Length: 130
Image (cartoon, helix red, strand yellow):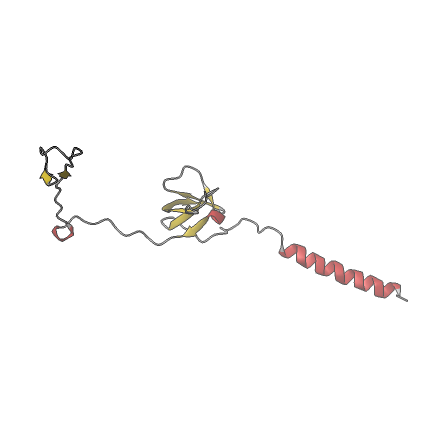
């Protein structure tokens, strides 16, 4: 037989643990950012609905502005929620165009003519320079 005092203390204990659980799962008040991104960082942006066998992340994009929950990135008009962003390495700088960076390329077009008529001797099967 349960005594009313024992039942009351059990109920108080259960309510206390429920209260602690609920308080730990309440949303955090937004008096500080909930992400670690700052202006100038490079990030990848997750696509909304990736097609099969395509990239889920696009970028890298540079962070232009931040709020407590979102970032504005270069090349995308809308603000992006921080859960759709992940850090990216800084892209390599473009080559300066110095003499040592230049590659020399030449272009030549070669056309091979094949004679469809085996009885004709007008064309040979040798390549011709254009």
